[in-house]
Image (cartoon, rainbow, N blue to C red; front, top):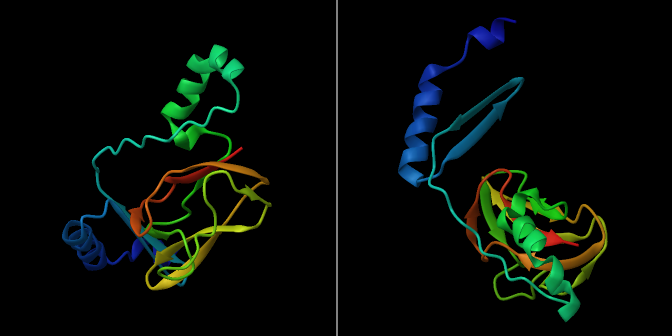
Length: 152
């Protein structure tokens, strides 16, 4: 119980300054049993995902599909970033991307990497299916919970 009351306010100030300096909206630090997350209001970024139509008959349900695509994070096949960091499509610069739109993936397959604090974290597909949209650019900064790609 003593640890919760001994939060290092100077560390919080330094983290807040780091947010401002790096133009991030959120940062989280964990030491032993203490976890500190500092966030600030950020700008809203609209993400436009390409819509792949498999057949002309699908146009009758287009209004429902448009609602689903309006918020990629609410899509049941969205693969979200588990952390703040930088998303990479391939294991190394110039290498073939892990996945592209139209690829079929297996559950557990690596689909992207998010680098956080110089650590490369493999992001795995949570389910099998086809990649219908990649929502972030290679080497793009991402926020916690931001949708990276969609698998249907």
